[in-house]
Length: 350
Image (cartoon, rainbow, N blue to C red; front, side, top):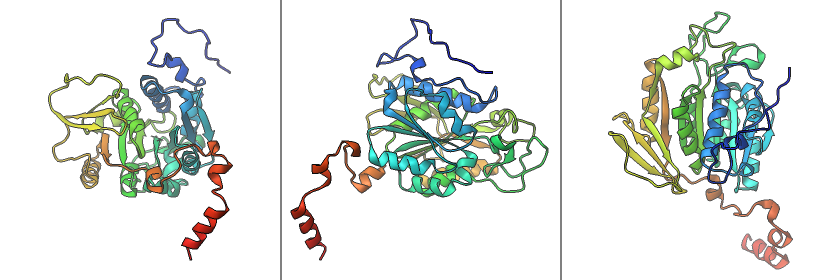
């Protein structure tokens, strides 16, 4: 059965600062299972990009293989897109970002795509601090191949067929921090109130912004005993605090909740506010964040929210001092400095 999105929309739909409605940021009708958490994440991405008033053609969405990597079809239909091979999305994102720094790079992956075949590429794109948003739709199983446990499935977690996982899980947030990621967060697909501000903050961060989103698989991993089910996550989620993102173009007022703890100004002037933070956790200290995650993991809880952010992040373009102009705009006079300049360079190396 095929479906089509109706072209007619209500003429009074709210528009953003660019005059776009939310429909301008949507994609095709989803073919994922009804109730899949991935669709909720897609909706959060649409909402974040619409409210930030980002030009759709200024976004490049990239993915690998898996249910999660199908999801970019269902959002940002007017943006650039590239569906790569299994586990290789970071390479494509790196090449594209190095060639044109003017686009927003949004990588979408899954726990199989990132934590197994793509683990090596994930580690290196994090340590290089590539300027991109990397979202993992984490359901703890391989949904396309009938629900086998993935590398992020918790030890003892029971799959739909009734077998408990005998292996320890890879914590992608901890891995990202240890590899050098400068923005790390975790959320739940069923909590858009938390997820949307986190996506906005990740978009505004300069450097590698990683968000691990627990996204229950309703077909293979939403059963009693699964630690990636809707019921388990809702009962065991512990938030680092309330997150509020204030875009730089909007007036910043002082009407905030009691218990305000941190205010962080991003590189573009926008602001992240954190409320009611755990006293023993400092989200701007890598060691403190790692300790807090381990404490909650040991207690059987899932720590969500903004976990770590480097306020002084220098992305790969800063480190390598790359061209500020997209490579496809450089002409022969830019790329070839002339014979005498080449002779001078060679002489300096002797």
